[in-house]
Structures are given as structure tokens and as C-alpha cells.
Length: 407
Image 1 (cartoon, one colour):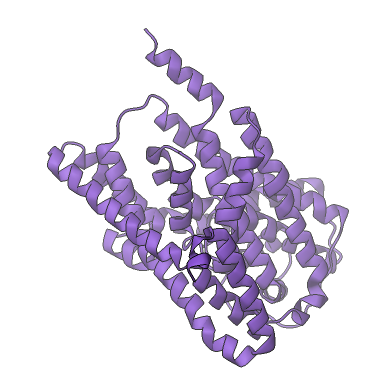
Image 2 (tube, helix red, strand yellow):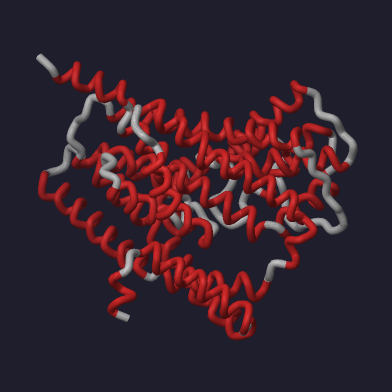
């Protein structure tokens, strides 16, 4: 046990994955019962994440030291979120036309998809002005962030002792998060046990081609597009940072399948990478809600697969409009497992595909979600840290900051 604890977190997680897969294959009944460990781990992350976001952002703003480029870096990160999400939709579009996919449609999924993009954006706006207690209880990170920013700005005029107390509370909650993250190998062991025992691999065979296309698009974003954006902004070799984000954030997100639950992991990773707290305390929670490159890939790919199945040939303007709609809809996807799938009918409506057929496509998405949703969340979550790092180390902002501070 002592030797095991001396290993890093990622090796211990990988050991948990292997043991979970082995137990799920050999003793599925026992493995399903051990899935409780995974459920408890995800529940603990979701419980502590809203409180962490609120106190961390509040303390960071109340105690922040002025930096000339802080607001510029936050704006740049949000700009990267938008560019990355649209780029992901374009990658999925190109791959879907290069390798057209068709689906065997039989059963419909349950759910109530939004009727228009306006409905998605309306939901996002109302989340921003949610009651603070309700936001904490329901894990509404946009609402937590709104109140944290407003209270943080107000507390800048508070006595220093009070602001020091806020920082003490933030440090205490951060310590609790570290304790929870230490349980990640055990939690992921439980998640893998339950997944392998209940789902297996055979169910994926029929839709392996679609799942493979989704994963390929996500790998292109993670290993080509994201490093390109990071290099353009920092002029440094991007792969050490990109691979560290995939290793630490991506692996955990792959198994928790929740961007919201992975916020504590990303905040800890951002701190280890030396990113400014004033930046990551704001951009990481927002990214968990609106930076959804993986969701844009899922929505675009499944909508085009539905179109190809029904013999619909989208025109170039329709295809480009699909990318925009997918990007906007992805921003409204909830940070919970399979949160993007109910937005697929919205994209299908661009091609005149009826809701009943579109919900059958959602059912297909649920079948392959053990791969699709895991890879999607890994891309979404790791990209939050990559883009935040890129904005914090943007070479032109560093230059402008130096020029501003020089006599």
C-alpha cells in the first residue's frame, strides 16, 4: 500500500481502470455493486464544486492585485472557447462528408429537446441570474459565478481582516477538494466496474463506425487544433502542456463523464501549471458550461448521419449554418453525462428531419455514449485548461503588459 501511495495520481488511476475492467469482465454481479464507489466519488465532486467556485472566485476578486492584462486574458480565453467550439463543428463537418455515416434507426429515446437555439440561450441567461442558494444546491455554475463576481467586487471595499478570512475559507475548501481528488483511483475503479459489467463492448459493434468517427474528430481537436492555437498564442512547444492536460484532466473526465464534476480537478491542474488564479478562477467554471467542442462534434456528426440515412444532401450554406447552430447549441449543453445528445434534434431540424426520427438518432447516441460521451467530456474538460494556459501566456499580452509597466 505504501508503494502504491508513492505512485503519482495518474498511474494509480490507470491501475484502477485495469482492475475495474478485469473485475467487470470476470465478476459482473460484484462489479455492479462496486459501482457505488464511482457514484459516491462523482457525487462528492459535484457537491464540493459549486461551493469551491463561489468562494474561490469571490476571494480572488476581493483580494486580487491589479494586473493590466487580466481583463484582456479573460476575454481572450472566452474568445478561444468560441473559436474552438466552431472549429470542432467544422472538423466534424469535413469528416462527416469525407466518410458519410448511416444509422439503423429503430427505437426512440426519451426526453424533451429544445425547439430552437433561442430557447437554449434563454436558459443560459436565466441561469446567470439564478438565486445564489438555488445555484449552489442545483450546481448552476453560471449562477454561482455571477454572485461570486458581484460579491467579490463588493468585498473589495471590506476591511483587510474580512478579505483574509475569505481567503482562509477558499483555502479550506481547496484542501477538501484535494482530499476528494485523492480518492479518484477508487472512484474511477467503481465507475469502470459498473460500465463494463452493465454495458460491455458487444453493444458498440453495430455503431462502431459512428463512434470511431466521433473519436477521430475529437482526437484531431485535442492533438492538432488545440496545440496549434496554443502555439500561435505562446510561440512555445505546445505538446508538454497539452499532454499534461489530457493526462490529468482528460483521463479523469473520461471516466466521470461530467464537466461539472471535473471542475475541481481542472482548478488544481491550473494551479500546478502556474496559471494566474485571477484568470483560472473565472475561466475554468465558465468553460465547464460553454466550452463544449466535444458537444459540437457530437451534434454535427449525428445530425449529418441522420441526413445521410434519410438521403438528404445538405447544401454548403446549410452545412455552414449547421456548424454555427451546433456551436451555439453546444454552449447550452448541460455538464452532465450525455448532456449534448438532446440537442441533436435541434440540429436535425435544419434538414427538415421530424422529431420522432431525430429522437431515434438520440437513442443511437445513448448506445455509443460509453465511448462518445467519455471522449467528449475528456476533450471539453482538458481544453478548458489548455485555452486558459494559452491566454495566460499569450506573448502579445505579455509584451503589452511590459510596455505598460515600463517608465
